[in-house]
Image (cartoon, rainbow, N blue to C red; front, top):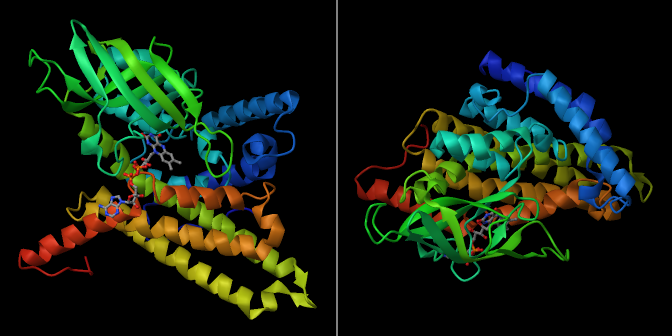
Length: 420
Ligand SMILES: Cc1cc2nc3c(=O)[nH]c(=O)nc-3n(C[C@H](O)[C@H](O)[C@H](O)COP(=O)(O)OP(=O)(O)OC[C@H]3O[C@@H](n4cnc5c(N)ncnc54)[C@H](O)[C@@H]3O)c2cc1C
C-alpha cells in the first residue's frame, strides 16, 4: 500500500512539494522493491546467499543514483557538500515520509550514525578534517560510528564518562571502554567522546569533555564484539576497547571542552527526526493493520467487523494523531528558536516511541503469526520502538527534564501557557 501524501493546508508550499516528491519516489521506486532491496536486513531466507546479497547492493546503488538525479540526495547537508541544504522543518517532514518504507532513508544518504557525524563535521570540522573524513562519508566511500556510551558508567549521565585522552607531544593517547558504538563493524573512523588532559593547559582545562576522530585501523582500537541484542547473536552495536590509541592532536573535533555541546547539537534536533521517523513507521503499521482487517476472515467474518479490532484501529488513529501534532508543534518550536523547545523535545521523545510501540503492537496482533515474521516490517519496527525508549536519553531522564523546566517556571511566579 503506498503512502497517501497530500498537500497540507497552510504549510510552506516548498515543504508540501518536497513531501509529495519524496512520497512519489518512495511509492514508485522503493516500496515495490523493499524485499529485493533490504531482504537481508529483515532476515529474508536469501540473507546468506552471496549472489542475492550482491544483487541487493547493486540495486541499492541504482536507486541511490536515481535519488541523486531526482535532486533528493543528502537532504541534511548544505548544498556546498552535495546535499539539498534543507532547513530544519523541511528535513523533519521529509523524515516522516522516508520512514514509511524500510531502509529508504539510507538510500537518500541519511542513515544513522553517518548522517549525525556528517552534520557535526560540517559544523565543527577543520577544512582538513572535512577533506579527509566528511567528503568520503558523503560519497559513501567511508563509514563512521559515534562512540560515547560506556558499559561501566551510566550513559544517562554523560558527566560520569571516563574514557581519557592524555596529550603526549603532538598526539592524544586514548584509553577507554565503550559499547553500543553503532555501525562499528563497517566503520572506518569513530568520533570518540572522552575527557582530554593537557597538563600544559594549552588545550583547555584538564578533564574537559572532547570529541576526537579515531580511524578504526589505528593500533589499540579493539573491536571486541558486535553486541547481541533482542536474542540475535550479534549486531553492529559494538563493544570497543581503546588501549593506548595514539592519534594526532589535529584529530580533535572542535575545541577541547566542546564535546558536550557537539553531542547536544547532534542529539537535540536528532530527537525530532527520530520522532518523525517513528511517525512514518506508525503510519505504515496503521495502513498494514487496516489492510489486513479488511481482508482477513476469522470466525465467519472479516476482522474489520469485530469490535476488538475496531478498537485497535480507533486507538491507533488517536495515538498517531496525538503523536504527530505534538511532534510538529515541537519541530516548529525548534525552528522558531522558542525558549521552551527543549521541554517539548523531551515530551515527544517520551511520548512518541511509546505511542509507536502501542500502534505497532496492535498491528502485529491483527496480523497474527505473520505479524512477528520478517516478511513484514512490523517486528523490526517493534524492536526499534523499544530501543528508542533508551537511546538518546532514556524516558526517565526526559521526564525529569520536563518536570524541572515546568517547576522552574512556576517557582519563578509564572504558570504554564499551553496555548503557546
Ligand atoms: C539500539 C541502540 C543504539 C545505540 N547507539 C549508540 C551509539 O551509536 N553510540 C553511543 O555512544 N551510544 C549508543 N547507544 C547507547 C545509549 O545512548 C544508552 O544506552 C543510553 O544513553 C542509556 O545509557 P545506559 O545504557 O548506560 O543506561 P543507564 O544510564 O545505566 O540507565 C539505566 C536506566 O536507568 C534509568 N534512569 C536513568 N536515570 C534515571 C533517573 N535520574 N531517575 C530514574 N531512573 C533513571 C532509566 O530507566 C535508564 O534506562 C545506543 C543504545 C541503543 C539501545
